[in-house]
Every structure is written in structure tokens, then in C-alpha cells.
Image (cartoon, rainbow, N blue to C red):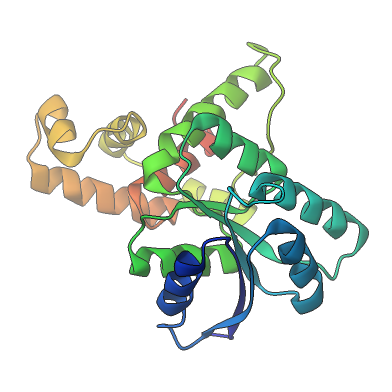
Length: 239
């Protein structure tokens, strides 16, 4: 993989040190700069033009959500600014999550995430995918449902932008449709049920449920249950 250039925007020194150590454990990740506040972070984004920037929400001068919004404005004026923004925070409230995504954050991750998962999130973000921490995924799912209702004329709320599935993925779904049982399992995944609960509700063994889940992930071209739920709602497979 090509070297991934990363900028860390974080006001707490110890947290910056920890992030740097965690990310640099992977050889193809290079930390190109560190910023203790939003003002300096915005400057370094323009100077270094990293592939990905980790952005804390609680910065001392202005917050990471405003930084994200300002950087997206700069991007609109200069196509050479193409950094992906990974919000990394301890704030899991619905307002914070939706505000960050609405401002243009590519991914949203909690700071208490394991190092390996943090690297996964960063790589996914670098590759152009949105990575949402499983702990706040339900907030995003509720928003997607609300947007679907609004598009169907059931509401007029102002919406954040949520991209539809890629045409290539849509073709894969059409060529490998889910079975009736896989659809039942997927609907319960969207509801947030674990394998044991799904097995109980569908009168299946846990092993059988796991087999169906693997099939669903494969057909939807996703890596985990959260991504499967988001894709199911975006594509209209589950409403």
C-alpha cells in the first residue's frame, strides 16, 4: 500500500503521543505533523496536505466541527486540498455525531477504540470509505431512516448528506440477491440484534445464524454488521 500521510489535530499532549505511537506501529503510516489547536491544524492541513487528518472535537480555540466546516470550504475553492477527516473524540451524543458528519467529516471514531481498530478506521477513511464507530452507529442508522422517510414525503427535516451505494456495489447486490432467510437475518441486524437473539427469534442455531451473516456480508461487500445495516438502509433492502 502507498504511504499514508497523517496529520494529528489534538490539544492534549499525552493523547497526541499515544495516537502517534499507535498509528506509527504500521510501517505505511507516516505522521507528517501535529497541531494542538484548530487554528494551527487548519494551517497545517493547507501546508502538508496529508491524506488523512485525525480531528478532536474539543479543541481550545474553535471546535473540530467548525474546523471541518472551514476546511470543506477551502476544498470547494481549491481542488488540491483533498484530505480525509477522521473525527476522533470522546463525545458520542447525537448532536455531536450528526453535527460532525453534517460539517463534512468522513469518519467518526471514539478515542477509547483499540489501536488495531483505530488503524482500520484510518485506512478505511484513506481508501474513501466512511468509518463509523460501532458505539454510535445507531445514531447514524436513525438518521438514515429519517432521511428515507423525508424522501418519501413523510417529513421535511433538513438533512445531512449521506451518499448512496456505489453503482458497482448495486450491481453486485442485483447479481447475488439475498435469500428470504438472509433478508430476515438482515432485518434483525438492522434492529441491532446479536446472533443469539436472532437465533432465538428465528428458531435457528447460533451457528446457522453465523453462516447467514457471513453470506450477507459477502453479498453486500462489507466487513461487519454495522456496515451491512447501513448499506441495507441506503440501498432500500431494509426500510
